[in-house]
Amino acid sequence: MAVRPAAAADASVIASICLLTGDSGTDATGMFCDDAALADVYALPYLEGPGGFTLVWDEGEGVAGYVLGTDDTRAFQRWFVGEWWPARPARDQRTEGDRWLLPAAADPVRMVVDAVDDYPAHLHIDLLPAAQGRGAGRALIEAACALLSERGARGVHLVTSRDNRGAQAFYPRVGFTEIGGDGGSVTFARALG
Image 1 (cartoon, rainbow, N blue to C red):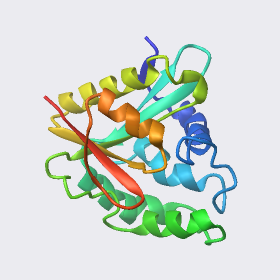
Image 2 (spheres, rainbow, N blue to C red; image 1 turned 90 degrees about the horizontal axis):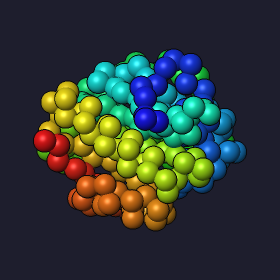
Image 3 (cartoon, helix red, strand yellow; image 1 turned 45 degrees about the horizontal axis):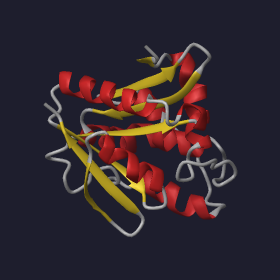
Image 4 (tube, one colour; image 1 turned 90 degrees about the vertical axis):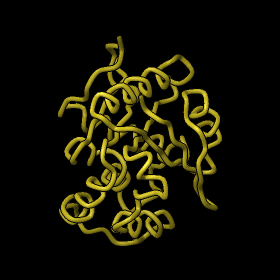
């Protein structure tokens, strides 16, 4: 089996995958004030935050993808803006990407979608191209949903960019339904048993 819990030693490769897939599934290198910013918002906090989890796809040759999230979005959001983000290095808005990423990171309700009461958990999944189309995404999603069910979460949601057509096609194939969105994003959710 290629799905395993992340270890502390996986943090740097998780950050790298986040960056290499951070532009709607493609490489986001150079889009932000520094290449660590994206992982500081969307990946590394889940290794430490309340209710957080990180599972990785590793076939023995190194991590090629991950799914991460939390079983309690509200608690995680409070921790993120109260503790995690203030402890990160100060960053200046220098790029177009910074103009949305940095204010979004400080937004006290960024992760709290309208349906959070019905779908209190949330997740993010990223796979390098070599791991795509071979069942890794499905395996990671199913493992995450099983873990969240064991923890008592009744539902999980995720948000993806409207530009990420591959993700929008993938999520319905693994049991997610589109429940909302705005001009730049789409929200999907899945009930957990």
